[in-house]
Length: 297
Image (tube, rainbow, N blue to C red; front, side, top):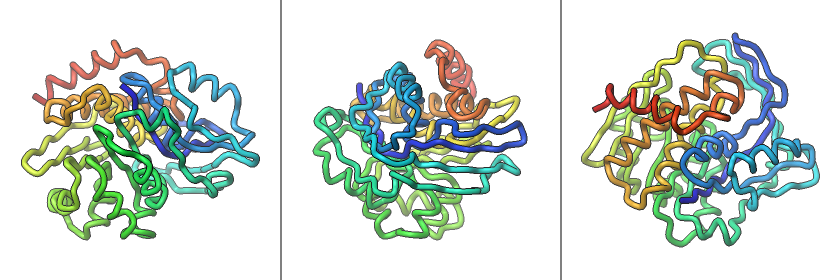
């Protein structure tokens, strides 16, 4: 029951209508891994600088995250700043790649022994480098963003040919396929080889689409949004963390993975950084998931 997550680790400055934080834990790998800890042992493959807080590394390990694949290099950690004037999209104020600019992912032996892989939101060239290092995993998934779709669509297409699941939001899948609706767009992606396309639709929930099946899931209702940063990464991490417990990618497992992912994403947006999902018990998550089950059967 282990999952490899390859992605970014960073320190974020975030401002929303609910407040702001400085140098909060961020990055796709951190959000996804913390979400996945509720279901399996996630292994992070990434890089940070010597300035990354030691107490944060200890906290991640205490959460059950394996950091053997994490490089600590001379220099500064990846940093990002964003301002939310509305909840749907952040306006980036700065992006400092720092040590992440020279990141070349390498899977150690413990990672190669895992059975599930999540290629988080990083350059498709890096995702391809990871795919060249694995042999047989039960489940391989990738996430992406509009920036990579515009910058290197051909490399991204090569990644999509080699994975089982794809996570994209509604705008991303339309941009990549040049289709006007998510259903025809998903059918285009399925032609490349993935078994499932997971379309994230924010406040409208998510859709899981396969060649012969389609499932709609509403968003879990949230009374107050504090910080939507990382919600998509949490969704993917929870989904793949749950999948890591199941060798077969069947409809029932996908449905439950969607429900867990939806609940954890909702918990995440109710606080800054990863605070919304830290310390939440699986019993509490299961109660929320069972409540959601009554809406989606």
